[in-house]
Image (cartoon, rainbow, N blue to C red; front, side, top):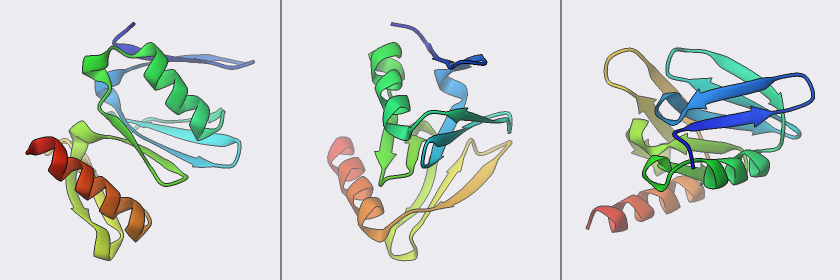
Length: 120
């Protein structure tokens, strides 16, 4: 197990520290990986494959990632705001970035319920 995620495809190798990976969004066979420093990398890999890599490669203490619906994986460490009725989630480190994303009401409700159970 490692504290970074390594993605290898036919053209490149990308290594991302778990603490700097903010979220991954997907559209079909392509996924965009967003990091804390504002970098975006597009890889030819479906979201499910990235989810598997996260679970396989990262140490359990670094696995603060959760899949939201069909197209998002977010790092819960950056979860700042969640409102299922507005279909909105905001990820932030409270100093250098603030990213607003949309997801389905049902997926965000499930995430909210999961977090409530986890903190009790």
